[in-house]
Image (cartoon, rainbow, N blue to C red; front, side, top):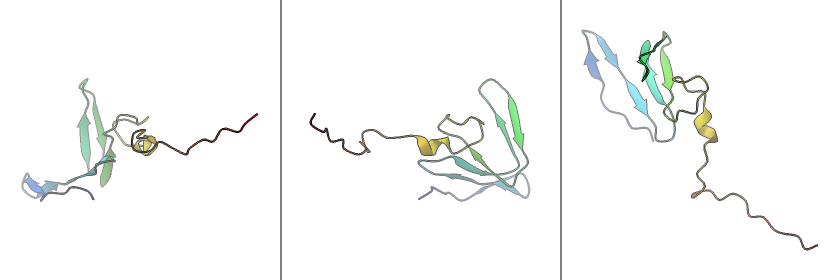
Length: 86
């Protein structure tokens, strides 16, 4: 279940709403300007954008759903293998 708080007014009539999901990106109502750690500014004029939080995206800072491929070895050991005698 995504975590959601009441939106806080920005400016006179504008609010910025961000939805956070434990295993996914941040969904941000746009338009959005993201400033990276190196100071690079990236802008999206879309009505909603998905901002990557796992840093596996090939289109970082935007999410490309790479987080879906992230495995949790401790939680999901995978199928058991049976050895066949020779």
